[in-house]
Image (cartoon, rainbow, N blue to C red; front, side, top):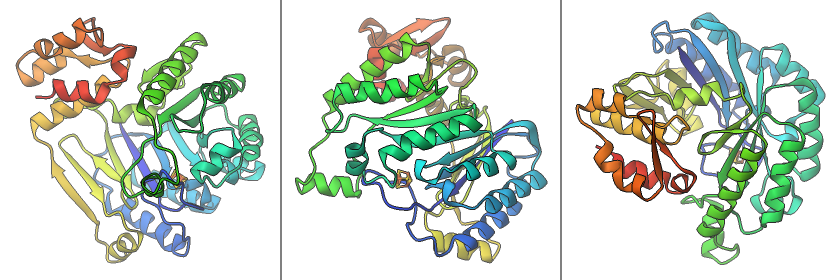
Length: 375
Ligand code: SF4
């Protein structure tokens, strides 16, 4: 089984915290769509005939594209690869792009899952983030989306200075009240070279407080558990049956390079085929120019067995299933338990059914614990 990710590198305006690859000029949108179709054809052998069970339009802001653009891309993927009849096809949409007409169009061309970038339901928070949508659009257009799509996920951000615990609770409660089946919640990170980093440096915005972030993450875990969401990956919560099939394939990488292959199309998109990883140039003009010459603009890294194993530890530790020790010992030839002992003793990991699983306390330190377990 395999997945395909398509990166749409355009946004209406730049959110101050964002370090993804995107352009706020749509001048070359049509050329980009043509280049994507060409890249799809040139990459026809990448997935080695494995059935494609997920397709994901991410970005950027894919909802800026026309229905006709998606139709062409989905048709091209179906002509080029074996797409499963029940494939999950996700579209990331920003609230300001959602209309009844667009929703009907997305549904008609086969989109069956929406990922909506709400981030907060409070106007002052959205202004602080420099989001393109306002609070009214977040609420109203989410209601519209619910009428047409069952499978919806929302993104929320926590841990920024404006977000009190009471506001955080109201954001999360709104998701619950609408019975949204999947939520991704991210602590605000101050990424290098972002407007947010510059504003903090120039004292125009308050610094982010990691302790407050940890407190809000703990509150979140408790609230979600109370109402029956599965905390199946550190940043992801779902009602039964609504896990993201696409993202789950990223987290299913096995220690010996097993796991689902995925092909990334578009500028900055990453691909993985079990033994190597590659990433496209993060520049729209260079990407379009290369595809015009039928060239694939990527760099590639062959993963050593140790890198594959560490990647498995890092991704699986973030999931509720944890790190399977049998898989590690089969791949590495020795046990991981010694390295994990101090985390078990301090209550950050538990050993259950031969798997190492993070406790809530451990989830606050997931990256550091993964690094300590690396080979
Ligand atoms: S809409 Fe998404 S990709 Fe675009 S700037 Fe904002 S966070 Fe980044």
